[in-house]
Each structure stands twice: as structure tokens, then as C-alpha cells.
Length: 116
Length: 110
Image (tube, rainbow over all chains, first blue to last red):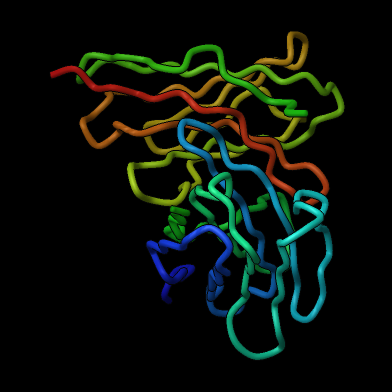
């Protein structure tokens, strides 16, 4: 069973361009989460999605950022008109329907975005 | 703001010794905590979790202790190995969101 996959692993964009980050959850997982990590910092929650639904986007900047998790295909985190402050590692995690006494999100390897 | 944090940004431990990484939280209603390990260039990896109705939980070479009175938890790694070198995060699950602290970098001395 393949783990959470993210691509690209590294992405370089000039200021003003768009960045599209993709996440394929583990097989059978219908919950996807996006996090952002600045250097020497912990991960910050951005958005929680289920298939075709945004459940919680309280960590998403109000402008330029959007996320989707379509019925078919990967989840996409989209950043429009990128600025230097968007440079960070973006991690995706997935989970099955939470149940029982153990709750676990499985993280992908991340996409490292550099804005020049 | 964050509700979990770590006491030390860096910890150096001799190979073979035990490591103890500490974490404090502020929300007394928090009921589920997770420790993650993040190696360089990789995503966080689940190590162990604990619910607030427990004081201690053990895994393979790792133990998590929870002290609800002082809102403190710790991760103990027995017989630390070079492969344990990483950044360790304590985290809290809240409303299906994982809230991470800043992390402690564990250095293993030969």
C-alpha cells in the first residue's frame, strides 16, 4: 500500500506566478489535510477536506489560497500570485474515517516551494 | 495561538543513553496528544499517542508520560540510536486538526 504521495517535491516560482501542489492520499483514505511548515517551525494547519467538500479552512489565508479534493484525482492546493513569504514546505496528510481509540494522520514527503 | 510548546529547541544525547523530550500545553481540556518524528527532508512520522485518561503509554523503545496536573507530557526514548536523530514534535488533536509545537532537534553524540 503506497503512502501519501505529493508532487512535485520541489517547486520554484517567480513572484506573481501560480503554484499548484498535488496530494494523493493513501488508498482507502477519504480525509485530506494540508499543512505549511516554515524553516525551524512546526507545521501549521491550513485546511481539511473530504471528497468534494471543504470541512475546515480556518488555517487558510483568505486571499490567493484555495484547495480542492475532487471526486476523482488528487487533492490540489493552489496558490495564486505567489509572494516570497509563501516559500515553505507544504505537507499533505490523509486519514481514514477516524474511529476507535487511535487517531492517526499519515503525512506525505512534502512539497518545498521556493518563490524567487 | 498555539497551545502546545516544547521546552528546549535542541537536545544532545550520547548514543546508548536515554533521551527525554518535554512538552507543555495550556488547554486543560486537551484530551489527545501525539508525538511525531521528522527527519530531514521528510514529512512527520507518527511515533506514539496518548489520551488524557492515561498517564503513561509505551511503545517500542518509546514511552510517553502525561501529567495533567501541570499540563506536561514527555517522550522518552530508550537506548538512543543514530537513527533517532530528528526533530520531535508534540502535537494536540483538536477538532480534527493537529496543532503542532515548534519541535526539539535531537542530536546523537557518538
